[in-house]
Length: 201
Image (cartoon, rainbow, N blue to C red; front, side):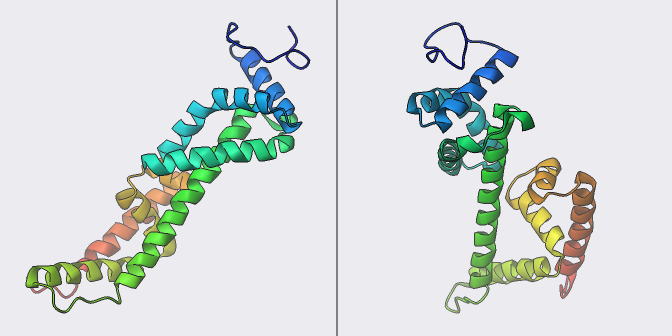
């Protein structure tokens, strides 16, 4: 049975390997021509791997679900731009998923930085002593983080606040893993030294 001029398979035997890739490529072509049934079949095939990719980067469940939905919409809207000569359909889909996931992480990171900057101007003078001490510690951490280079700060934030591995941080920042490891090591040394400045113990 030819995939390019035959009805979409229902519960027929699932093809494997190259045949599965060819089927996905054909269905994307049909979706690009406005075939909503073909797009539904595409979604059934890519939904699980897309969500897995997004979840591995974004981590948060609800945000991962949102991003995965955004990926499916983008696949539908840009199906006509898929070029099978440049790679497999699944690789193209996963590239979109990875880019969307990284964009979400970076957006959340920028939001967190803005909140930290805003919080640095808010001092609760009527707090209890313990809260005041904790606030001073947070301010010291923010001050020390600002003393790092941008790459050091981003790498440390993604690793220790975002829970990402060195390899994932390297992928998110688009740099070599050795560079990430070096910057994180140097940044942690600077943070340690900075946190010790002004201590009376």
